[in-house]
Length: 310
Image (cartoon, rainbow, N blue to C red):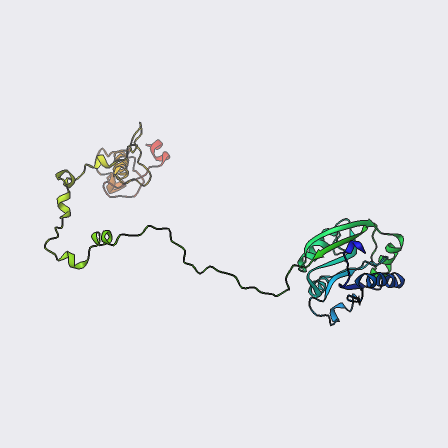
């Protein structure tokens, strides 16, 4: 009992289930009553009736669950939350529970890490594992009979958790400083602020000389710039003239006009000047023979077969 830190005057709750041996439960209660004395109290609760009990909040200093030798008690999230509720601030919970050594899907038996996480989620702090041991043959048989669970990888762990030093739902007023903090900015001299302030009345004051913005321009600023000077340094450089992407200096339009002139000049020239009128006016060797009439200067594409036949 010294491991649980029980002393005289404390209120202790012992939680048992159907797997707990009756004689072992009675022996444990007798030892606890001798430790708590007349000023203390030992309460015995069945785990299945704990949620329906009339215990008030912060009723016990220590809760022992599954500690009875031979017990194979499982603790649900609701049971752990109820134990945390009836514990006093800074009170301790000690429990024993069979656990799996490996993760098993959809298993009613938790692993040791998941059991510790469940205690933490119930509101307890300083959760830690105190002891780990193999199940005795009697405990293995109890797991099969009372829990209907069969596994060869079960262990028994003892875990403790502590309730924080405040009650669930308690509140405390925050002490906020009401003194105004300095902004850290230097103070502005009123005389300096007035010196640099210009009001609408000052605009009508004859003593205020306003500068004409056009007088700030030099004669060179008024000249129209040469378009060539506006081109980028790399625009059109190299053996092959090529305009920049998103060209704004006019080189792109200039190259487009040159391309159009080259296309017009590359068209076959008429020897008689009547090719555009139609086949009735064309020579026997005319490259446009067999093609419809077209307007003078209109671009006409000749197929390779037409050129070869010609």
